[in-house]
Length: 386
Image 1 (cartoon, rainbow, N blue to C red):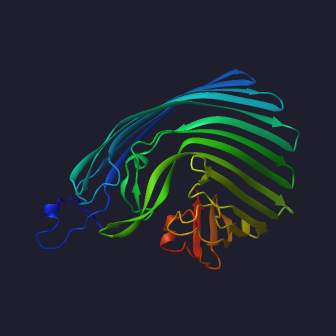
Image 2: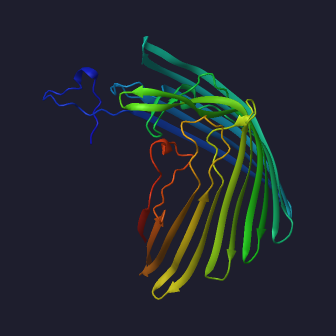
Image 3: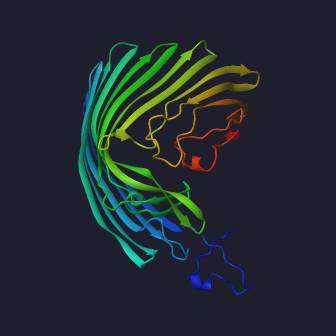
């Protein structure tokens, strides 16, 4: 289908047929520049200097006959950083500082009951951040790392100025032009174990975010020409996050192995002493894999997987349009092989996700208000490597 940009007066063609119009029509140009200078001071110390720059220009193309979701804007972000690293036999240390500046200039018009209204303006954000971390090789199997950092994030265009239907999420979003920058303090500790059959990594972290930006269900609805949609508003609060991630593998033999990946996170709105919305549920992913050889084939494998996701119980009752969905189990099956053809390689693989076609809804997917997540999905891949 070809969309034509036409004015409201000309949306009916000479033949009387209605022309197709895009709901949203915009052009976003992004340019990035990264410069890094590395100086090897000694065999055990290294210093890095650098600059990161991003220029973005967003323009809504007129003729859609609908309010724009976000305004036209120009954005420039620049940052300079310095990193120092020291390495010893069983110990490493790294520290760094960074300064960032963002200039954001927006201009748009909305059409409401009072007619055409201008909104936007120029905003400037800047901050100094830093981090330092250590890494200790306790012995041949055990490693311990720790990192303490200060980070920041400037608000985005949709967090500041969105006011319209978000077609990618099926909801109506409203931003807040008074949103400030986020500032986070995070402490991460990592324990690693490596051996011939068993290896795992355990990461535990604690984080405090000042002016944490999030979108929250408004518990009201917006009626548009295409239907009625739930309203989400961007807000800020001071928040705390605690969590852990675990990844491990165990090799029963040269051909049979098992892997597991688990994650949990706990978050609180400290200002209002309540749970934050849309925090991921606890989940565990695991799989068992068989690698073997077949005549005339290389790297043949077969894998069975299982995922378990708990129901999110840490939420405020009556704070959402629908309560978090129930827990669910999903199963996967996949396999593949490779074959040499002359000096090239032909690779074939087949994977089946949601093997038993289970009905489930993912809490983080906002389409859960309307439908279930994807059912059984079969993917066939064929690659020829030159």
